[in-house]
Length: 49
Image 1: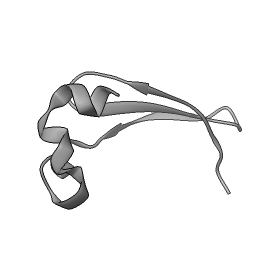
Image 2: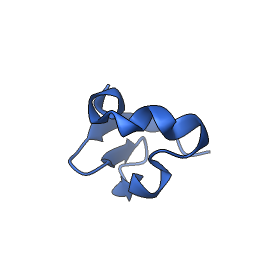
Image 3: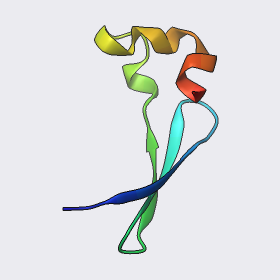
């Protein structure tokens, strides 16, 4: 199992993830904005929190 040790919010609904094994990457979550449980993200400040 991959353990996330740090998550940093970036611009445009992107998140940088850092894993315990030293790997890292950026995930673009913009396609989820406004859908289902992600409707709250219509308010960008809510996403940043």
